[in-house]
Image (cartoon, rainbow, N blue to C red; front, side):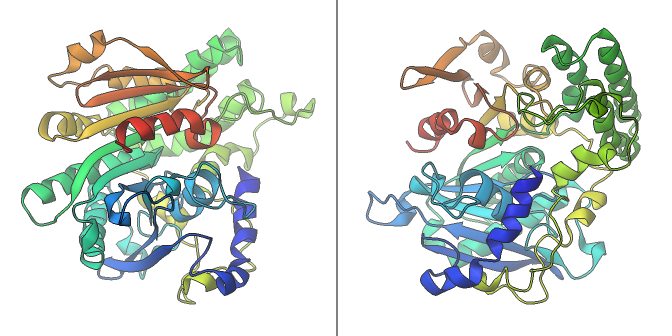
Length: 437
């Protein structure tokens, strides 16, 4: 993923050239802007209008919000150019962009991420509820700018830590709709590789790696011991310390599994004999932390030019506060939000969509199943008893689904942490079933 981020910096340097030909950045109609969600806290959003218009007005097609993970990963950068936006990192039009089917709203969230920024570090969000409140404030302002979207079906999609933010955001937005403080037609929240129960995810790592043959029983024991240490800290509410240990746990995993890609375990890795014997290394120790927060962005030598096409103020530097975003959430990072998922199932009419890539280690499928099957809601037994069926495209098995009531679970074949990148056909099936109806 390092090359992805370096390419993104290079891509942004083309923005002056593109601005000559397009309004904004890319071939499709778009709008963007900053909203002050709190005094001194500015959140950036970037809206791409649907391009495959078979209706009279774009507002007749659904609007999808995309929330990236991290925390500190940019939706307007990574989610847009690497995953679902109209252009890829080579400035080529993406054939399977979501903008073909719906309006897509990328939000750099929490404040301090991407183009979003705070005037003082004390304004960075330190907990999930503050993040959700900021997002509701943003949407209130968004609907004031675009009242035509108030009756448009809204769906919140998220990835990784974005899932943790999405569930609380969805719950608070639903509450705001119910008390009539905001007009919105919120329909669903979709959680891709969601960091909902860190304990369940981390405790699944050792067995996952053992079963796939990446470690032997000795390696299993080493990883399991580290995971149990984190689990104990979570149980004693020492979540800040648990986060610090989690950051360095990547070294243990990559040492025992010899350089495995935690985001897609079947990604080919460069191999030398030194990679087997290499001991502790300060740089490798934080690989997982760096990838998740997208710190491997490269030098910002050309940041003066990269925002020209969007008219970004000169004092705003893309991604300059992202490391502080993660640090501000150190204590909150390892706290679960399964209770919020239960609140959505028990207290709202929203559909909950969960999808997991079978090759993802960070938020592994077994770990996700653990917390999903423990959820307490009226439809629990019906969901557990529901049939698990295959999903396919052009005669190829792309994954599996299990649906009951408001809860739908998807297993995505040949996909890791970033399912829209690894298997867009399976994710397209989810869009068609839940969004494009």
